[in-house]
Image (cartoon, rainbow, N blue to C red):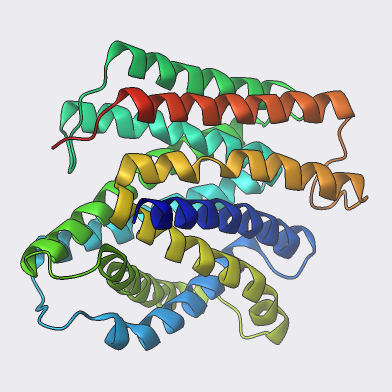
Length: 310
């Protein structure tokens, strides 16, 4: 079970990194606007989720607000986070934005320590040192090479908070589904079910925005497919990881996208595709990789010194 969660977490990290690049490929390549990608991709995700919700619905489960309300909160937070993330990606490379998302660990640590929402856990002094180490790594990542504009950082800061509360809501929904079924369900199955619920609802929201921000052009719908495919892979991994390992451990594994993103960005930049990523000097890439490793080490230390709540 542990190894399944770890594998799913790594799949999540790769899926996120590739999805960020796919969003840049779509917008910078003039295939459509970021708003069109946001709406069309989530319409595609909603269609996939609605097609699979019947298969994913666990036998014996009935609708209950105990898992329904957190699911709705998760949808609201996710939509806000996605909008803000796209706003950030309009002003900075994916390899710069992705590592900074690891600051979400600090938000999760603060919320769970204070017991403000969902799962609670005690964070020792060494654990908080790890959190500060993670923030320092994020600062180093944005402090070398391409410096993100203030607009990108503001959009990203709001996205991080929204993503954190989305994650907490997801886990609370999954746990309440398990509780309703008295634990007679595999955690991955519970996570898959909640994923179909959230993305079906997200698709409905996207449908409401389609007349203003969507598109009927074949170029836009086909151009959104790579992002939709990579995001689907990432979400299957993420919800499964949260269900098996919990929100903090899931976020720790998710944070490895920092390393994958800077490595992918470096390779793409070297291949000459400056539209997707800037080709920085090798020393800059080295600093960014070092910063990503610092982030991963920090959150790894956080997981080691912070025991999950019983």
